[in-house]
Image (tube, rainbow, N blue to C red):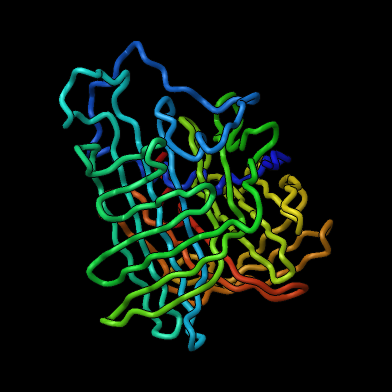
Length: 367
């Protein structure tokens, strides 16, 4: 069962995302000049018929796509960790020519992996950029797999297994959905700006039970916790008046979830396409428009607000969002966008954990 309720959902951002690295995937310095003049990338419009499991995988007629995993983990001693694993696909050339070289560049594949060691006060991240050479990176519906080198997501039904190995950390996590996927947005579309097609198709798993292993500093430990997954595909999203966004995933102890994002404009105002989604205990999604919630920034770390106050009057919800570690900023070398994404905890009328993403604070996001 899929809940398409309403999200104008914001979801978007992961602007949610939405934005989510579109910007990131801008790879302008690697762009090819040879996109066919006859091909037009598809855009996200109302009326799309979602079909799973097919829509959990790639959509090559759209320019940008990502699979975003974040979560909070604990080992048997109670030590806490955050993790992030993200796979991006950015289309460069269409139509694909079946008789061309296996080394042609039709898409770029970017990936980020990060671990927050709360007790050790450390934040580690790595990135990688590849093209779709034989076995190097890609997405396969037939194999139910997304990968970039030895980083991967393997699907078995709706269960997902994450693998990431770097010189500083490694993790393998089995994720089991505790709720069905949610289709974010209104009428199946997560709108991000004024205008037809400035939107994404966006699917989330808002509560995934996570178990597995995490290795750091020569030690491997068993871990368990809770994760969130976003999958978005689109061609256009932000417009020139928008500079960045703040996105929150909220997983509360009462088995409900909340996703909120606000899009900031260059004139300092908030865009009316900011929105959110409340997911109740049964897994049903309820759309929240920009007037339904208020996000108030507090203490800052190097310009990024790392503490926030969240108010959702219709839910009688007032939350204080606090980072578990101020420095959870990623500054990838292979893209033009620096962003803050890290583990947070919530207190107030309810308690819980989640992730916070902030973009466009040092300079406007490049989409």
